[in-house]
Length: 609
Image 1 (cartoon, rainbow, N blue to C red):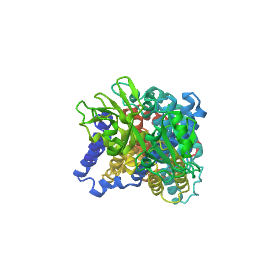
Image 2 (cartoon, helix red, strand yellow):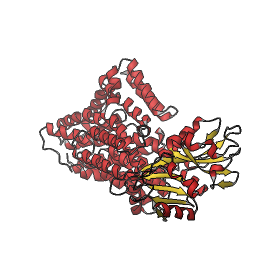
Image 3 (cartoon, one colour):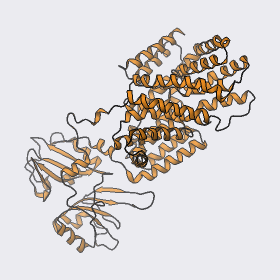
Image 4 (cartoon, rainbow, N blue to C red):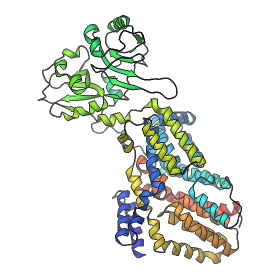
C-alpha cells in the first residue's frame, strides 16, 4: 500500500513539474509498481491491450484521414459560415456541435472526429487552436452525460440500478442533468479558456530559415504563366504512343511536365499523376500538362488532334503523386559546366528540370541546352519518391526543404468523399452498436488506408501520437494497484461511512468527491464499476432514493478535467493544443470543482431523495 501511494505521489509531482514527458513519467510509475511486486507482468501490460487504447490508435488514423483528404477543411468551412468572424460564435459553435455529437458517440470518437475539423477552422479563421481544443475535449465528456450511451459510466449505473430490481433507465433519463452540465460548463469555459489558453502557436513565426511552400515555389518561378492542359480524345493520333516517340520538345519546342489520368466524375474520384518520362504512354481521356509558347501549343494541338484547356483553374498544378523542390549545387558538383540534357536528370534521376534560378534571374526557356553554372538553383519536378531520393547525392547538390514532409501536407482532396463515407459508416456503427466500438474504429482505420486516404501505410502510422497512447496505456494498470492494495475500498467506504450521520446531501457530496478524486488515477469506467455498488448500498442504508447517488458516481467519473490522463479525450488534444500538465490544472480544476458543486445541488432536485 505504501509503495502504491508513494508511486502515485511521484507521478503527480512529475506530471505537474513538466520537465519529463508525461508518457515517460507514466512508464516509470508502471515500472516501479512492477519491480515492487504490486503488479504482475500481465497486469502491468494490460493497459496496452485495453480496447480504449487500441481504439485511440485507430482514431488517430481516422482523424489523420479526415485531415489528409481535406474533409476537415470542407466541414470546417461549412461551420465557419455559421460562425462568421466572431471568435465567440466560433467557440460556442464548437462547444455545441461537440456536445451534441458526444451525446450519441463515445467521447473519444467525438474528439477524434472533431479535432482535425477544429484545427482546420482555427487555421482558416486565425483563431487560437489552443483555446478551442481543451474545451473540445471537455465538451465531449459533458455531452456524453445527455444520453444512456453517451459514456460507459452511464451504462454502469444503469446496470446497477436494474440489478437492484428497478425499472430500466430510459435513453433520455440523463438529458436534463446533461443539458445543465453542458450549459454551466460552457459558461465557465468562456472566461477560463480566454484567461489561460488563448495563445498563438509559435510555429507561425518566421524566425530562422523557413522552407518555401509548394504554392510559394509555383508563384516565385511563375510556373502558371505558360502552363497549358491538353486533353487526349479517343481519336487523337497520340493515343498509344510514348512521349519519346512523339518527341514534342524537338518538334514543337514545348516541355511536357506531367500526364494525369483517372475518372474525375462521380462521388468517388480516381486521379493518377505521372511525371513525364520517355516511356510514358498516352491514352484516351488523359490530360497532358505542358509549358511553351501559346502559338506552339496551338500548333501542337491542331496537328495532333488534342483539346486545349484555356481556363487557368484546370491548368493549376496539383501535387498528389508528383512534387517539386529546389536543389542547390555544391561548388565542386560534377554537373557544373554541363548542359541539363547532358546530365540527363530525367533519365538518371527520374526528375525534370522546370526552371533555373541564377542570382536574381529565373530561366525557364530552352533549358535542355542550358549550361549549369556554380551557384545555380534548379527547380526539379518528379514523383515524390524521386525528388526525395535526390538527397542521396550530397556531393553534387543539397535538396532544400523536406520533400516527403511537403508531400504529407498536400491534401488528397479527391479522396474526401471516400473519407466522408467511411467516417459516416463508423459513426453509425458507434451509435447503433452493431459491433464493439473498438472493432468499428479499427475497421474504419483500415478502410482509410486501403481506400488511399494516405499516400502509404507509413504516412498513416505517422498520424498516430504515440505519446498519448503510451500515457493512457501505462496509467490504466494503476486501477489494479489501487484495488489490490485496498486503497480504493478504504478511501471510498471510509469517506461514505464517515459522512452518513450528517444526512443524504453530505453523503452525496462525499460520493461525488471520492469518484472525482479516484478518476484522476484510474479510468472513469473502472471508477464507476467500483463506486456504483457502494453508492447504492449507502442510499439503502440511509433509507433514501439511490438514483441521485448513482448519478453522482457517473457525473463524478465523467466530468474529470484536472489532468490529461483522466479521460482519453483529454490526452488526445494534448499534443495538438501544445498543452502542459499545468494547463489542465489551471482550467480543469476550477471547472471540475464548480461543476461538481452545481451537480451536487441539482441532483436532489432532478431525482428527489
